[in-house]
Length: 597
Image: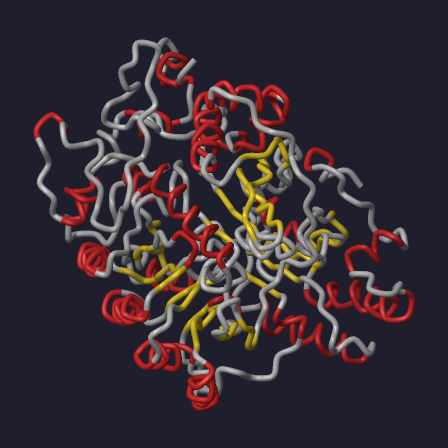
């Protein structure tokens, strides 16, 4: 039963208020036109703040300035975080230069690489939204569905130029992204100046120039589209966000099990044979509510490369029609799987597909980091993996001139630049004769500083001052905490060892902290929940070890464990495995037991 039939007789006041907003929004238009024209405020209407997410941006304000502005009887300093849709994370040199230009012209002068393999901008004022989006549109980039209750940016193992298989997987990320795009023209009308066609007749199938294919149209029992204006999503859209990842073993750089849908490439003798399909991953939870929890995805079958976009669509439609629309805290696909059961969900997917999935294949991952430094691709060309601390591309005083350096590389190099889900950049397609020139640019701008394995394997979300959900610092604080943990590692003789460290300012999990061997989740300013025992290759959740602790207590808790790890670990044993083996923490075997001690 499709979502329109299921909700036909359900009063909207029995559903979450966001469901009413979506249904009554005129396919995500709301009153955004009027809100953008209102110069009396830097904000948009409260209801429209939910709709902007579907178009790729969030309303925020500078929390560092809230008290000062309140005392001055001024409204908060409102601005927008703008996130790009970049399936697979590839940016051409020309696109990089445009994206760098708009960072200064319309944002706060920095670019931020997200854990979903794309860029986001901070500090975009309301009057700059349209010119910002129009400028990137000219570079064949958009922000459609980068946020909101839709399929978001599709991620994949980084760098399509590394091998033929990498290229195939990258191209599939684009096919899946295009197939799962919303069909509404609201974005093009409101921000790009497209004229609306009377009656919405142009709604379906009129994509921007950057799109290469049409999404398939699902039909109802009468062979007519369920909703001609929005054939996949209907006016209800999804219950919550939906995320797809593709990985090429043995590298799990995308943290495949953290997403609603994961495709694990089956590569035999250098050829892509198919994908093991996983469903039900997701990171977010709410402090103090044990009914919410992170969950890793489970394999449900196997499909051919050609079938992957249809499989992703079928999974999304089952979630569309069965996800919880009354309680958004229970609305992600992971809870739908828990409620329906894995086998029942799989049967619904197969019913949507019209055929059964083949049995899942075996797979093996051995890490979830990035390959940094120089590596050679199958075609003989070279690729340089550049570490970017917490993904922030800026020129740092007395530090790396990341923004200037990468801009100069984009101006002088004709190869692509690729973003990774670990917030780093890969400079691709470098001929042997050009390696020296790239090395010179890296050195000139101090882009290759000595960094420890601990720092290279650490990630943080943005948190303060812009994220409205942040309870504690993250991006601005983690580097100094890593300084202190590095000192502990050096003293223990572990300076050359890697431990996966992740930090977020709230429990929503944007930096995937529940997969870390050492995870920090903000509880209050200066205080964090400490989690231990995640898997080194992203295959196991961690578990709460200490609650609501400050930095002194963090170091007091971790120092003896790191010292024991140095002397008692088995050969090749990761830290997350070690703390479980010695009985310091219990292993989390499934999301539903995440909160059990």
